[in-house]
Image 1 (tube, rainbow, N blue to C red):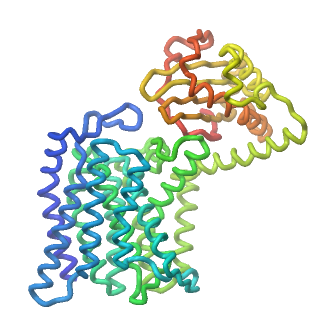
Image 2 (image 1 turned 180 degrees about the vertical axis):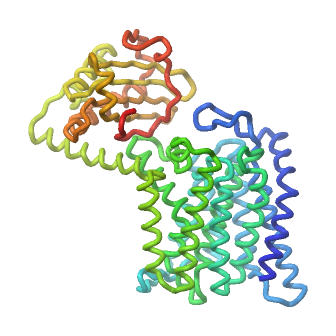
Length: 512
């Protein structure tokens, strides 16, 4: 226990001293996060590289604990484990610093992440055997790529989650505390020391990172946290037999992993790139509900502490069932409270219904002027004619309004709107569906359709537009310069401006 206190204290003190220096260095080197008015809503540029301070403070805690144990001939943290993890975390931190400054391409960044975790696996720190509901399963060499996949997933989960002041630090502290208790209960001194060092380093940084933050972790910090937590979730929960109950690490990392999985599903169903940023993460959902940064931070922190505590309880009571029941209950609660997942469920329902609609149209021989077209076919149609056909499809599907926004990340967009006569009041009782297509060059086309019918049949007719929208979105996003500016008589001058809205979060939702 003294090792834990010593490691924690040294990392905490080091972090408090080093973070201001990291903040100053980031400002002088121009490594700052600048507001963009969309996702980054802070008032002024905020320095990055907070992860460098966290990493160095983490190393100080490990070094002091190891030196103390060596001088007194005590059992300290396993040297090989601490050394390999420190080297891997250092490489990840370096990659994050470069990415913060130069914005690395996602595929190259992923390759570097894999390179960083391979030494951990080659050093022997990988899962050899797992248990599922008490049934053992020997993995053999398969455990090596699975461990690499797990660690890379943890790195990116924390990286994606880091989108609000103090969030990644809070999640890291909550998870590391519980992993330290689990490792301590398993008599795993090395994992206990590593977890204590991480808690101390993150707690020191959190002092400067709480809302309003004066410094951000950056990728250099969020990826280090994800890597260390991923390794601890494996090594700290294993017994001496190197057997891992997959329920425990899955439960500890439930919130970050769930947020990442839903982001992948959301972007896939809305036709966006997996690396495209959006405002659909857990903290964005909470903020959009009117909660403050502090309130959202408390909710996410409590969720992470709850899953971690349940994992620790499952380990101490040797009951894997507790872990699974708790994990399912927390996820169901979060979805029920619309903290997370409800939007993606709506997208999944829409996709399934769209598939059934396409099958029904084919069986019934339904015809459409646009449904059978490809995006290449639209190049021969003038914009005005295509816009007319799209309005006709919307009207035939029972829609009350249609809105199209075409633009790019680097240029202002154009907005086109059509409404059924006297549909304003009725549309408030209906449903709204938003879909979009984005190109690798940053061009996009977003289409929003509103139905006045609140019944299931109204939603069903709205789904018939999904197939029609796909080729139009694809073509208009790639050929945005060919659309002329048209006058919208149904809107006021102010409402003709392109709104600063979230792109890529299509789904069925109740209209305001």
